[in-house]
Image (cartoon, rainbow, N blue to C red; front, side):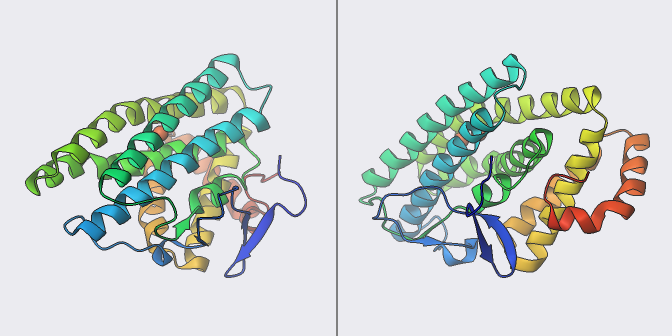
Length: 256
Ligand SMILES: [Fe+2]
Ligand SMILES: [Fe+2]
């Protein structure tokens, strides 16, 4: 779990300190500081491969952190995280190979680790599942759904096939995230409140940092979160949220 000194402050918001990276990487804190110039030019394609490479590494690290932080989680859930680590490691290898084939290299562009910095602040496993799997990974699935067709239109068959292979695994990650948020909240109704508090905190991070990429995905995620719960649960969350929201903003994922 998070220890003293494990955090950093970005535009006034306390976030988890970045994971270790090789010295070749320049680390920035927000998505708009990572270059992104579309998928048409060679430069843009290298930037995309570089971003995806770091994104997959980061996702691997988040799944591994859940294994480390929650040794007493149900065994089947720990197996899901372990399989996810294997999947994300393969995805990062695919993205890295693609980057090299395009003539790129590690550290060619700045990287941001915002997903890690947000999710690793949460002290609740259901909240981590909701934000990492049901919000961030499900949000990327929405993008990946349309990307292969667009890339084939640009003659980029290889990347289109890579994304399709990755998507097949990502569907399973979102599926186990859904299943385990339901199981954990059924076993402990207070977990619903923790999920809601984490979503409220995520909105606060978006507003304070002004990170547009995070905003897009958080907005989709908030709608998806509410859709995942019954009307009675949503009403109860809204009632409890009114009294706990202030605390949720200062203590992510832990509304007690
Ligand atoms: Fe992945
Ligand atoms: Fe994934």
